[in-house]
Length: 320
Image (tube, rainbow, N blue to C red; front, side, top):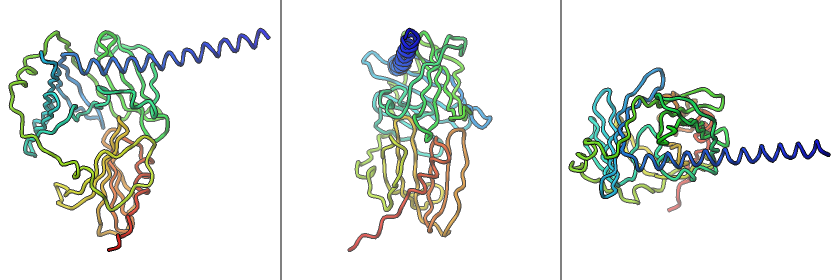
């Protein structure tokens, strides 16, 4: 009887520890979100994938009115800058005319949800507090965002113990293989916004592009009959591919952390088996079935992309 009581006590302690660990992991992620929104910081980081490194410089600040100001610059190759003033984000790239869109977040290598409401992910991911290590010369807390199924990768985050800022991020398979990594090489947190950020307030941004709601939610000529749990449609439209000028039907899906793009268009080929390439964690799968070409792009495993591609069916012609 005493032995049974002892076992029950151990189980109680174990389950209590798991609950506290899960809660503390979520608290750490909430602190990260607050840090990304409220701190004035200047950072440099590199995105490492396929044995190559892409360096970035990232400024963030909050002006006296409470408006967020942000600059993200790719440092190698042609100049690419993303600027944000409040809810206006501007993209400046060499091959496209500069333009601005209405958005509360920039589109860059670091998932935007980390600066948002992390509780949106709780139904499809587990938050796990693992332990401490040292990154960028600072004590860091390792938090793992683990998918509840095999259709997604895991995200491992190392957060600064003092400021809760991100210091390192890895995208990892279920088998523990690292596919992509973001490593911070410099972090400076200041009381006031940097001069570069304050100058952005005086900068005239490119013209705001007004994208009609009906353009982003067009009716497509196909359905996708299976998706991993948690993915919902964000955008659906028809447009032409810039390089080939070929018309394509496009759908963007998201689970809050991961985006999946689906492209469907006619093909001169009748059949072609699925082939794919990987750019770090990003997979691009392409196949042709019954004269219809399907491409899937996203940070997802091959089996997930293949299952989505196989689940696409063409709608029957509408009767006049």
